Image 1 (cartoon, one colour):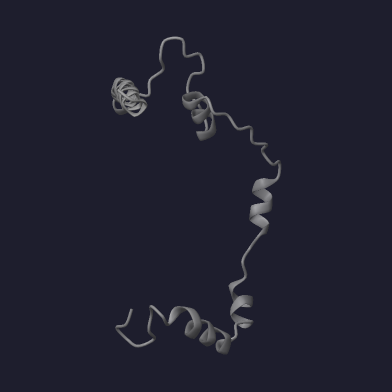
Image 2 (cartoon, rainbow, N blue to C red):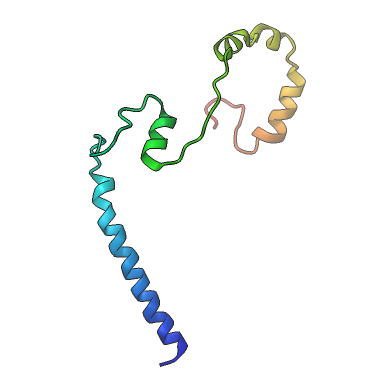
Length: 110
């Protein structure tokens, strides 16, 4: 038996072992109750990042901005100003160059 035959045998054994390990873990993934396990001192997580940290042991520290809510409230999109500065000829050129390959202006078109 040559070296290639041994590689096939070892590959089959490795694939079988990985398949068995996968099948042993499959019920834990499919039928996970989400309840705390014995020795789980973390309790219920409040945020998604905390849940990911508990379940997958992958933690990313994110610094919370102090004024994040205030900064988001300050940014207001002014539609009136955008419509006032709109250029009809530029829109026609944009439609002709990019959109007209798939869409049409005619009624009932795509």
